[in-house]
Image (cartoon, helix red, strand yellow):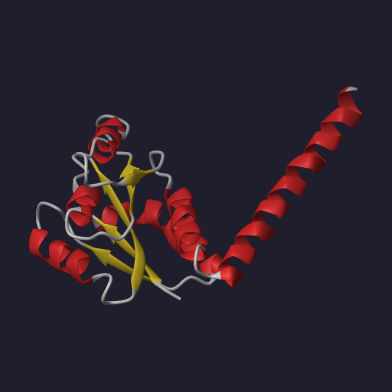
Length: 163
């Protein structure tokens, strides 16, 4: 199975990124976690992305706050799918990171999730890997079925109480 690379611009992003790590663990997807800054360590970030496919990665998650150029910097150096997580900061509640992550130029795509949406980023990476992995696809199907059953149970309880 291919790995998922998880890159964060600062270790202060780790509380958000841990949700992606935990989701990947839950599905048994191998991953590597690194701290590379688009601005402070551009060469190691570029080297990671340029070599990611050869190093067994199938997708990369990039989390950053504020200027949030990390996902774009990673995407500029690979054709692997890149999923950006805009991280909420103290100044603009993450809107700066969201806009920096989502406003990519044509030809350099970055899939962008909600502010602090690390679990969703991991699920997108898992879905990408599941295109070629039937076992992983089955785990996703099972999780969706369990989620649907939970909602229907809640619906039943609400209907019984109010109808």
